[in-house]
Amino acid sequence: MMERNETTTPCCAARPVCGSGTERGAHGRTETKRARRLRPAVRRLWCAALLLVAVAASSCSGAVERVRRNIRFEGVESVALHGLSGVDLTLRAVNDTGRTLRLKEAGFDLYWGERCLASARLVDEVVLPRRSEASLGTRWRLQASDPLTLLLVGRRLQSGQMAEATVTWHARGRYGLASANLSQERVPLSDFLRNFGLSVDDLKKLF
Image: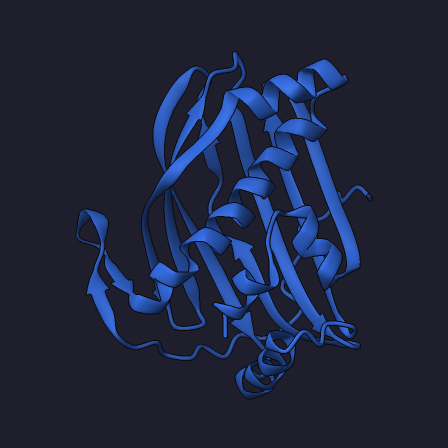
């Protein structure tokens, strides 16, 4: 685990790809059928980034356990997937601790070999006030350097060929007065999925 002090930028240039099959989701938002299938994977990834900040800012094992127990994510209220250019995700969350949790920055880059294929970046800071239950709206910017190659790689990943796939990720935020600045470079995709509570089946829903 390494600290990051600089603001990171996506490893690839954006080439949006339009989606299809949109329907209205919760709160009247446009939601694609594909977005509904992505709910479990996206929710766990986002929750993991937020919890990482709180856990990293806790100084002892007892505090870590209290964080895990008292910060809860109770469900997805809406998901809107905008092709390969962005995702709007709204979660219902509870913070029973006495500290406000802020996720200031988060990002994920997917590599195949030495080539970065796709990136995701949190657009705006997310705040979960202390002793509160709230609907948290987040927007993620998605970028793909080569959508066609990404889809071809996706087929390999679906068949379990993950040896060349790695992920670089970072998260920065505050838990009360304590700050956390976390990152990992080029983590094997299989380890990344396991660490964030995701599975190969979740990954298949992306392609």
